[in-house]
Image (cartoon, rainbow over all chains, first blue to last red; front, side, top):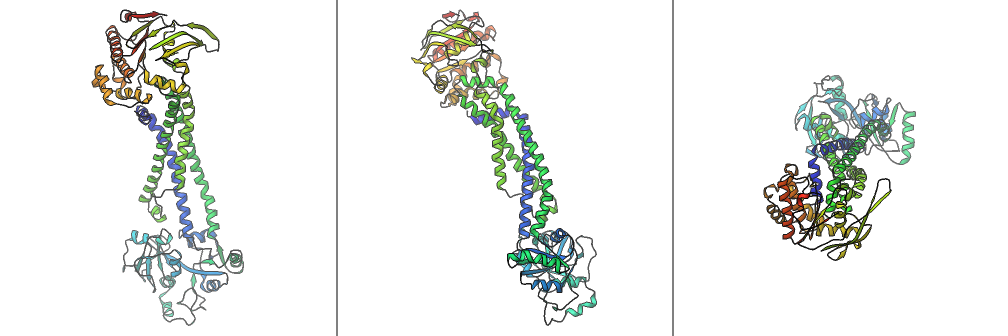
Length: 412
Length: 213
C-alpha cells in the first residue's frame, strides 16, 4: 500500500465523479490553451512577417488594409502608386532600403508577387531546389505553394486575376517554375515570387510589349528594366526600412502630406488590430475561467462529500497508526492529483484540437500554425491547477486532520 | 502487559456542559490472557477501550502498556505505538470499501510504518479461511467474512494487544462462535493480550476473566 495507491483506489471507486471533475477542468484548460496557442503563434507570425519592415507606402486608403495586403498578403491592394514617385522616395536620405511590390494575380488562391531579390533576403528565404527567378515570367514558389498546388520545377501555369481561384485567367502568358523555397515559417511560404515586369507583362496589352525589349539607358532604381523617367509604370506598394530613428518621425509625415501616397507602420496597425481581436480572446478566456471555477467548486464539493462517507475510513486509519498529518496529506494530494490530471488532459486536448484544425482546414496550414509547440504559459497553467487543487482540498483536509476518532468509532 | 490505575474520564456534552465523571475499575491483562468487559450500552465500555488504545486521553489515572505510561507519549509516538502494538476490531467492521481485501490488510503495516509482506497477508488469510477472498472487494463479502477480514487486519502486525469492541453483536450464533473462537486463537498464537468489550451475553461463557461496568 501507499498513499498514491489509496488515492487511485478512491478515484476508481468513484469513476463517474472523478471523470466529471476531470472533464470539467480539462474543458476550461483546453480553451485557455487554445487561446494561448493561437495568440502566441499569430503574434509570432506577425512579428516574423513584419521584421525588417518599418513602413509600408502605398496608394491612399485604409492603412490597415495596406499593411494586411503588403505585409501579410491577406487583403486586396488599396490601389497603385507611380513607379517614378516610388523611385524618388527610395532615394530619400532617411531610407535604408526600399523593396517594390507589384500585386494583382494569384494561382489557386496563392498570390503572385512581383518584387526583387531584396524581398526574399528580407525573410532569409533559402532555395530547396531549382533557382531564383530572374527573367520575366520565371517564378520561385514558396514551400506551402509547392506542397498544395503540386507544381514542380519546369511546370507552366497561368495566373488568374485577383485572389480568387475562378478569376479571369491571363492565359496569354504562362509562368514557368524556376525554383522552390525551403519552408521559412513566414508569409513567403504562401507566395509565388516573380519579377515586377512579369506582372506588368501579364496585364499589359500585347502591343506595348515591344518597348520592354530594349535595355534602358538610365534604369530605374527599383525596377532596372525600365527607364527612370518612365511616367506610366505603376507598382502596388513599397516596403521601407528606416536609416535612423529620426526617420520614424519625419518620413511618415513627409509621405502623408507631401505626396499622393500614404505611409502605414506595421507595428502600429498590428497593435490596433490586436486590441480589436483581443476582445474576442478575452471573452473566450473569461468563459474558460468560469469553467475552471465551476470545476474547482465541483472538486471541492466532491471531496467534502466523500469526506462525510470516509469519516469511518479516516478514523480506522487513525486507529491503525495513521497520523493526522498523513490524512491531511492524503486529501491535499487527492485534490491536487485530480486537478493535475485535469489540466494535463486539458492542455493535451487544446493541442489536439489545434492539430485537428490545422490538419482539416487549409487556412490553418496557410497560417503556418503548429500544434506541436508548447509555451511557458502552459507550464504556468499546470502549476496553477495544482494550486487550485490544493485550495479546493484545503478545507476538507483540515476537517480530516481534526476528525475525532472516538466520536466517529463510537457512532456518536 | 497492560494495566490501568484510577482511570477516570469526563464527556463534553455538545453545549460545553461537563457531564459526570466516569470512574473505571483498575485492570491488568498479561500477554496470552483474554479479558471480557461486560456492560450495557452507555456504560462506557467503548470509552474505556478507546482510552486503552490511546484514541482518547483520560481525565486522570494512568495507563501502562509494556510498562510505558502512554500519557507520556506525544501524539506522533502514540500513533506509532497504536499502529505497531495494538490491533482493533470494531462492531461494524469498518473496512475501507474502495480497497480489496488484500489492500485493506496491507494498510495496517503501511500506516504503522512497517514493511509490507504479502506472504504475511496470505498466511493470515489462509489461517482465517479467507484465502480465496484475497482479491475480492469488500462489498462482495458476507458479514461474517468481513468480520474475519477485520480480525485479520487487527493481527497482521503481530500486535501485543488486541482490543475488540462488540465484535460479535451484529453476527448470528454460528458466526458469533466462529469469531470469538478465532479471536481467542489468534491472540493465543500471537501471544497477545485480548480485551473484548461487549453487551453480548453469548460471550460470557467464552472468556474467563471478566468485569462488568
